Amino acid sequence: MIGTDVKVTVTDKAAEQIRKIMAMEKKEGHGLRVGVKSGGCSGLSYFMEFKETPLANDHVLEFGDVKLFIDVFSAMYLNGSELDFTDGLNGSGFEWHNPNAQRSCGCGQSFSA
Image (cartoon, rainbow, N blue to C red; front, side, top):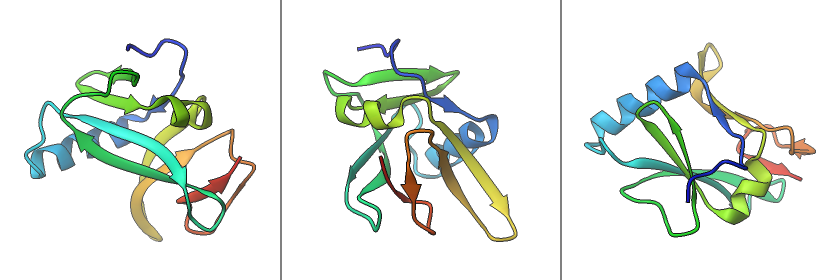
């Protein structure tokens, strides 16, 4: 399903990095499945993986040629979030700016809502 009720944004820098990784892994044309799952030091953790097609109930968000697939469970935790990519002195990687996170851990990969 096309996601019109889920608002997630992807920065230009993150979209560029997603394209680079897709090319390196020969996954052009795939979507990036993003979501949350139980676990991590704060209760929930983020995950990302390339998938060829979305599942039947996924929200599909398009940012040019970059597509995000978000499952229904994850959508309620990611709604209003922004996916960014940082490459500063303290390391590089994807990071979520999530207004639904009440608390997050030091690694930035886990949060509680």
